[in-house]
Image (cartoon, rainbow over all chains, first blue to last red; front, side, top):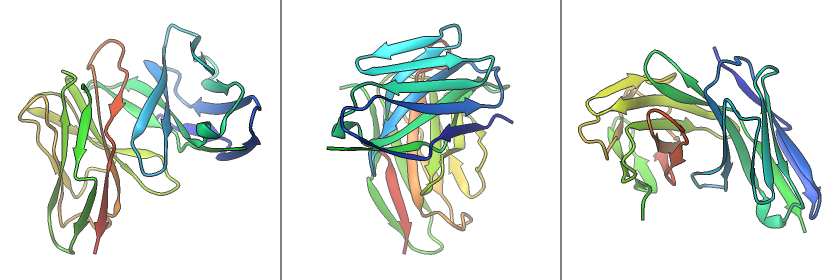
Length: 114
Length: 113
């Protein structure tokens, strides 16, 4: 059974720091991997999608990498800002007998202090 | 605007009542999903559907039911058999094949009173 973990569970950094969030998964037979942001009491906002054939994706100050063989993905946030404070979740997309579905990690709660 | 709409945003249920959460999308996506989120836990899959008139149980389907009569709609009913329904419910959709990027609604917070 696919399991997804995220380390650290919570992170607090001063504004301007570069930081790395980690996501690990147990089954490397994934289709894709997606990173999301969730603000308190809100739905999930898609940040980056990495196809299984890709090794990284970039969007603005965000860079996500994927290493299927080791079962790891990292989300790099450059020059963090207070507005980046949120919970960040990764999800692996796996293909089953009935289409595909998403398995989520528990998230990393990020606080960027002004 | 294209997207996923969940309603209501807040819902209160009395003990023994069934309630239905609405999820509508205009993204022309074939696949739709329902997840439950509890404090400090990741999202857990309740039900998902890859095509109209078909759906499958996820990891925690007991006490829930769904229907998929239209491509755009995937309502979730929380029945009285669900003993601990207080949670945040999230609906998502995606293309069934290809890029598989998922898009989420803003969620419904259900509270038992």
